[in-house]
Length: 567
Image (cartoon, rainbow, N blue to C red):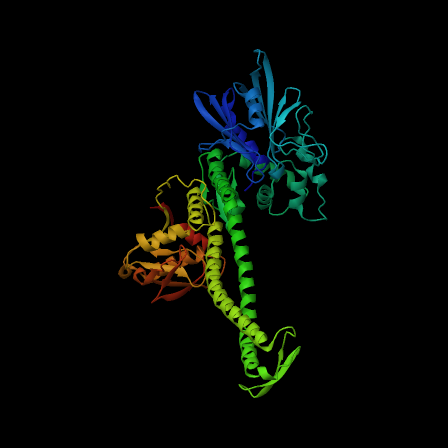
């Protein structure tokens, strides 16, 4: 991505539609993001402003957001000072990622007042600040105290700009001084240009370098001016390079042909940020369940260690049984207060020394060894059974942890929660409430030959796909001995070609814990050979008559096959 000063410059021309618009309503999405509902030029517009540490930005949006019932303090201040106000001006400060929105409003007694909404888009240091016309802070969405910050963002303090090194503004005469700030002998000219020029990102400087071929003291300024002039042609683009998405407000020659273009910068921003923002909220919602599963995983791991210790100790049981038998046979040789007895083991014809409790009789010592033998025998039997169950639990929890990593929708979070309740891992506080009957949605893909492939991303979806949705003559796929999704080609086996099998196997490998590995083993067989074991954990099946292929996941191929979700 490249939300740099040049991008802000381009975006402001799109936001001109808000000038002279009235702020009818302000709502806050979360701790760092807000929606301003503005009526301008006979239309309603939604301006999203965010100081999120990863997704800081501002743009018009058509997306729907939920708002908390109780308005946070910053929202109350914003409503008091900005609602009902008229946007007079939206201006960029220099070529930086700082913007001022000047608003004409009225106070409680009807007098006109001027308020300034300051947007600082600076990654994790981003902020949204409201000041009066004299730049005295009314509030900030993030407070900075004087104890550990170089500036203070608190009500009542004077606003000061973020502390940065002096840089030249490339959009005025200051640019002519740039060559004098570059040390050509030091090299890394790109980094020096970024460090000394306001609002330039490494991405934009790469484009300048592409146009210049190589930098000299004479061509730096003309090439920057030429590239900026070319960039005045706003054409929002998105590039996919090395599994990363890069957006910009204009095509970049050094990246080649764009993968996608958009009608507006706001549409581009909605596409790029909304899905990421939604996924971060889903991850946040799922975090409590993830921590719970991790605790169960650690608890089960410790239990397995203890059971192994019990089994190790139980290996001594036969020795204690033999001591009891030998004591019974040679009881007449035991004298009062003997601490041990040396006898010949009639099983091996070897001498054996038996420790004795000097305070017990020979008979009581023998009974003591028999009791220890019986106790260890019972512990061995119980520990063996419990260890088998713990291994199943461990496999189940490992699979759940993998599924938590691949959650993409709130419905999947709810499905995981329902499963944890069903398994007794969490308690359902609403015991008397009826469960909502939600239709289970599977992830759908299409093979090279146009066949439909369905993928389950959690145990609820896997069970539904394998035991209810799929038919007996459909092909079923799963990574061999690796946690992963159930995958089914929803066509008769007779219609399935080799390439379809490879495509479905790739989906199974990609939706598994081995998605970043090469030559992943994937088993496949007809659904008729897949069976759910009675009483087994959700998602657990056994299968026979399988074949195995080895496949390396390809993310671009997966993306090209994706169709969305289906019931």
